[in-house]
Image: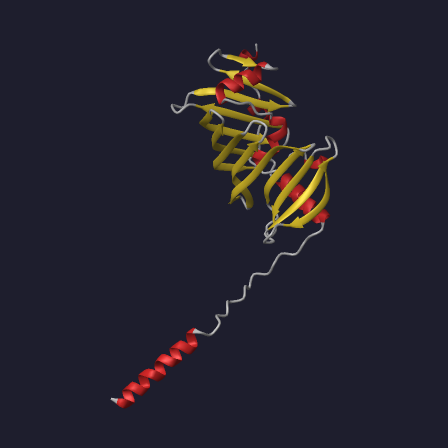
Length: 260
């Protein structure tokens, strides 16, 4: 009995001593990314934009803001920075409107009146259908995962975020003088965010998320646009994405009869 008691006391002491030892955390084996030059970072963005020539997809778009909360089913066709088509459907697959941006101009087909609208009337019809209006000339690159007006941007400085997972690149649009801050993934060099500042005012923020492989190319299946002056948010979720399938120019033309 005495021997058993001695063994029990010794065992308790060992457990106490071991439990009081400082715990050694395992060392991370993942190497931190290296800071690349501004030239190589910008080249990576240009190469990615050139790699995605056109996109076809089904999308669900949610638009929210003050007294605004709408969701739409749409088909989306984008060809570089040149052309874009958005067909919007009701829950019963009825066409609510067709928007086409091509050659710097925006047209909208209004099925309610069976006519094509152009000029300032487009903004009125867009506001009636969507509750807001979007200038596709500013955002067209966003929907294919590219940086808007990339050729006009001049890089100034790049720095890490707090945990060295995102490279933040500050640029200036040489054409407009606007400041454009771009966030890219430090490991994959894929775009993650963009902030546009005009003067001292924040105009919009863009986020790319949910990257998935499409024909060996990483493509963001979720795009968020936050428009500061309007206090609005546009969330576009993609499905059935096809890249670089070749798009005929006919896709961006409305029926001749409607144009007349």
